[in-house]
Amino acid sequence: MNLLDVNYFAILVAALSSFMLGGIWYSKAFFKNAWLESSGLTDLDLQSANPKLIFGGSFFLVFIAALMLSLFLGKDTSVGESIGAGFVIGFFWISSSLGLSYIFEQRPLKLFLINGGYHVLQFSLMGLILGIWP
Picture (tube, rainbow, N blue to C red):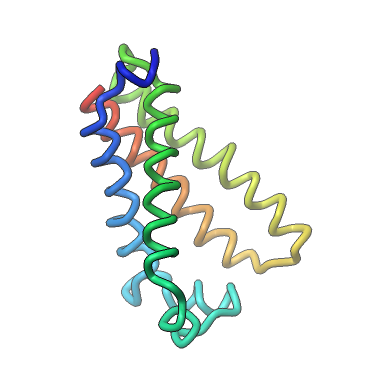
């Protein structure tokens, strides 16, 4: 499969799903306060950050991740296989890599669980979307 064979609408929706999931996951209703505390950030830090860099850079990175996931899955992957692949990537590749860094950086387990959990759901959701629209 090459870059001309992918469904760019599905990739765009998969990338946007990361934003929606992140908005919910890191909201006050879920993990915002625990994430801020564990990461050493404050609401003031977030307010003073450059939103163009954060959201523009984030969208670029999740778009690339969705594109590469689409290429990895290929054309003939079932919905179940694409969700499973997304889960495996999120849990075993992304979260384990985060865990490795967090161990050496001596970051809190709570932060690992919050961020790792997000990435497991993020890639599983992107797998679902890419599986629906191969």
